[in-house]
Length: 279
Image (cartoon, rainbow, N blue to C red):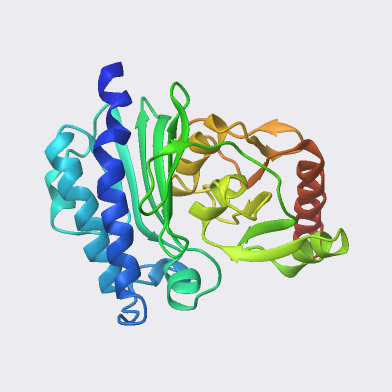
């Protein structure tokens, strides 16, 4: 994919993601879970009409602007079938990240996630938080930006203006207790929200852990390109840089605006490891 098309990806997709986020927000409390029986866990099984409608809003715009990309979409909607199975450029879509716990149960912010990878390396991303009314976007070349209702899109930087940390719903209480003992406030959130945590007002850091064989999913990695563009510190644990590609195994994602918070996240991550070894 040409560099110019990568640069214009956000220009094309940001309005669609914002529309999709608005639709998801409008349907809150009006849809029910109709689980996908071919998935192994309740989190993966969760599906609502909002997931399907939100994805179609995104994919209609995507197909108009980028019909030649491959697609890795969460749901099997009508427009998803129109994309190629393989291509150098791949667009990753999660129409409602956190359907079960964050969207239906209201446990922290859910998210609408759209990312572009070229040759398996993430180049651009958009993550909207419908309940909070914000959308973040960015590329490493152009920086990170935030869009709020009735306001112009503007640059955004990772900041540590609070003691609140977002934890993905799969993380056990051992990690949460480490953070609370260090005087942090803990809030559960979708993976997409965690990936842009230090860009969110009132949030300083985020932590994810995945026991899946593939580690943090391809959808959970989209927001990292935005966070990096905003100057966030992004780690896979033990001082390792979090992968910039779609495939390298990484079970943990630690993200913060300053080194002190990142060190505490490392303590919390170690608690997860200790719990796993003793289980």
